[in-house]
Amino acid sequence: MERRRAAFQSGLAVFAAAVAAWWLPQVLELFSIINATVYTAMAVLALSLALVWGFGGILCFGQAAFFGLGGYAYAVGALNVGDTTWAIPIALLVPTLAAAALGYVMFYGRISDVYMGVITLTVTLILFNFINSTAGEEWRIGAAPLGGFNGIPATPPLNVPGDPGTPLTPEQIFVVALACLAGCYVLCKLILRSHFGRVVVAIRENELRASLLGYDVRLYKLGIFTIGGAMAGLAGMLFANCVFVSPTMFSLAYSGQIIIWVMIGGVGTLFGPVVGAMLLQALTAWAGTLPDINPNLILGLVLVVAVLAIPRGLQPTLAGLLRRREAP
Amino acid sequence: MTALLATENLTMRFGGVVAVDGVTLSIGERELRCLIGPNGAGKSTFFRCLTGQYRPTSGRVLWRGRDIVGLEPHAIARLGIGIKTQVPSLFDGLTALEGVALGVRRLHGEREARRRALAALDRLGIADLAGATVGLLAHGQRQLVELATVVAPEPDLIILDEPTAGMSAEETAGTAALIREMSRDHAIVVVEHDMQFIRAIAETVTVLHQGRVLVEDTAPVVLSDPRVHDVYLGRPPEARQAVPA
Ligand SMILES: Nc1ncnc2c1ncn2[C@@H]1O[C@H](COP(=O)(O)OP(=O)(O)OP(=O)(O)O)[C@@H](O)[C@H]1O
Ligand SMILES: [Mg+2]
Image (tube, rainbow over all chains, first blue to last red; front, side):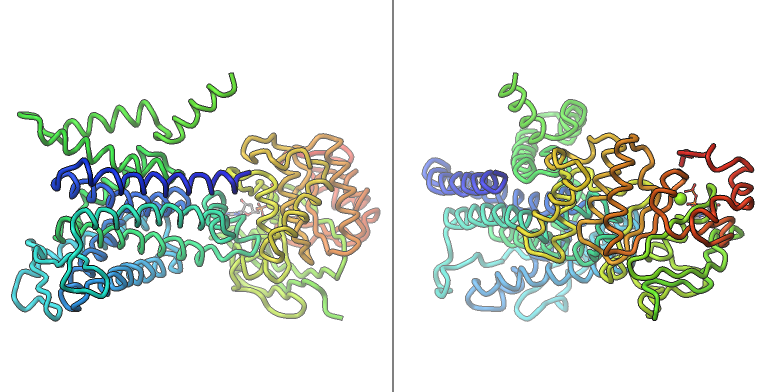
């Protein structure tokens, strides 16, 4: 029953992504396509935290760190290898290793939840400051200048695999981003259905009980945290393909936003945070066009109202309403 | 023959408080042991030392002759020690079946884990709660779900810290029956305050008082020992059925 539901949801997600990939490039202008790609990349980022926080119970304030690392690893890789297809594994590997190392220190070092928040936040800040200070000519990795606060504007986009001379069009990159989003969603569903995923959720429910049943809590947390880091890195890679990488990727503003997307969408859900990420970005963009009003003011207001009106988040609230209608 | 589990001079201090004070105790294979003692005697702390939740200040814990002090709780669980903690420790967000099956899944395949989990729930008379979310259950039912969680993987040693607290008379009787049945092929240590319950199940009773072993003997001898009456506030044990935790 539940397996069928998960399969149905996965199928629906893939179908929706396919429809969007086919239809939107026909109706949207170039500028909007690039924006849609950014939204999609951010949805992948939201999904990464939805998994780590919502199911692993690990509130990571530093998801932006892996996002930034993924973006920079892609940019540096793409500038150094001829065929940018090869920059993809680099963009995944760097944040994965970083998440594994940070996770190892936190989970095996028995760091309490509060300090875990502090540490993830601090690491993000350190990376932000470090990347910001790489303006000089001496800061380059191979052919790639890190560029300090300017970032790396000259990042080549993905090319047709095996054909470095033919870069993908923005429409094609949009399709790649949608495929990544749908793929990550299905991957999350598969993980949560697996024994590993169920242990992760059980640990969120009760760490002590899980360990008294013989499960090494540290290992499972490390596992889910690392997967989340890799996914955030993938989002960074996509972002690097439609905007360009700069230190803001590591900023607290981003780290905070990701948490808000997941919160609004519903902690403990997957689809909710995806929608949350898209809605809030659209809202931010709209608020930015309003004259004489600070967009942050509007965002703050929306956030407060949302937290008060739908404390459980979009998806659980909507699901609850639907259920009530079905069973009067 | 080496005991299944033995402690040697096990001591646990919290600052100035000596919660467990040089306890030497030995549990044989398939033994059913009752551990009793007034509130604060150190029973739960003793268990936490056995299961790796606390690292004892000094002394040894031997599992089949091997010192296991310093092992992580999950590593100790993997040796074959299961514990039902005094405060129920459950997966509140999961269904009873999911939670019970999770513990078995480490040892068996998906189907078998499910089958064994259902069998454990059935044995405790709560098969009908299989699909219920654990967090929404009444206290007595939660105790039963936790019991099922602990016994379903069939650990060699089962530790039960006040398993019947909050249970109805009927649930308590069912638990006593389960303990007797399980003790045929598992070693079990139970903490209980209910003297009738102890009479019904126990062979050997160990009395803990202020962290030390006060007496250890057969149930009838221990329960008529005046020192045991004294530590239980001087009242006869019959008057102390179902002491609140
Ligand atoms: N973490 C701790 N820090 C400080 N003191 C503790 C701690 N845990 C237990 N103690 C103390 O150790 C003593 C033994 O407590 P414990 O819970 O083991 O007793 P118990 O025999 O299980 O009692 P009860 O019948 O009430 O469950 C008590 O005095 C208690 O206050
Ligand atoms: Mg106790």
